[in-house]
Amino acid sequence: MQKASRILADTALRSFYVPHPSPRSPRPSRAAAPPAPRGRTFRTHRTIFISDTHLGTRGCKAELLADFLAHNECDTLYLVGDIVDGWQIKRWYWSEAQSRVVREVLRKIDDGTRVIYVPGNHDEFLRDYIGRSVFGIDVVKEAVHRTADGRRLLVLHGDQFDGVIGCAKWLAHVGDRAYTLALRLNDGLHTLRRALGLPYWSLSAYLKRAVKNAVEYVSRFEEIVARAAASRGVDGVICGHIHHAEMRRIGDILYLNDGDWVESCSALVEDARGNLEILRWATSTPQSDPAPLAAHGKAALIPA
Ligand SMILES: [Mn+2]
Image (cartoon, rainbow, N blue to C red; front, side, top):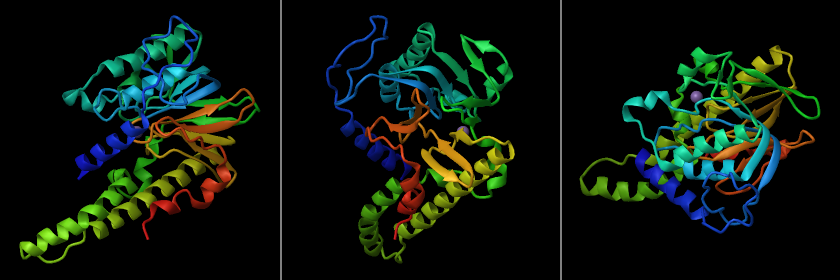
């Protein structure tokens, strides 16, 4: 089931990734980037936040990530945890595209970008290096980012709240995509079970419960993180961990999640004036207005 949904997701992503010649090549030193997908342009941001890239696993959408890094420059790059997946060391997977991701980050450092790394749970081995600079990357436990318009945003990965959420994290990974697939499989499964003389069992009902639980997990995570930020007296919080990009106001706190590079291929960017925006690199639909998201963002996840 998980494999099937991954194949489906991969296929969906590939269909968006149409190789297209780059409109221009601004720097000769740029690492060998793949051709830009249709409509991609080079952009410069004040700050880029990415997390949950899970380098070292097959799940990492390294092609898209390297392409994103090649087309988006910034003064400061925050790596908000789960960048390298140390949990997969026994099933380590590395590809040319993943090397390209590393080269793009190092190239940014050479070009003057400050890189700040806030380790997560999958790369907790890097917590031994907190307070140090490793390959020109500053490793910190957490950070307070000040936006161009003066807001103070707490930057942390988010795994520190796992213990208090109270429902299983893996359920959060059963997304609506899996549910859509399940609806299609359900009919076939029903026919098969009937032919075998087995009673009716609804795969979609099973997954609907799982998805409902996932939605509950996500909103509880968001509320707990926002509450922690409020107690710290900051204006907002930027995190990752749950692979669910979001920008919404929770009470007085601006909650921002930069998403992931396993499923959604999303990043959070800040421009020179302090405007924040979620970029979705696979589909290229920017999300910059927090208001409508709060209204129907998660409700759409719950199947009727
Ligand atoms: Mn994590």
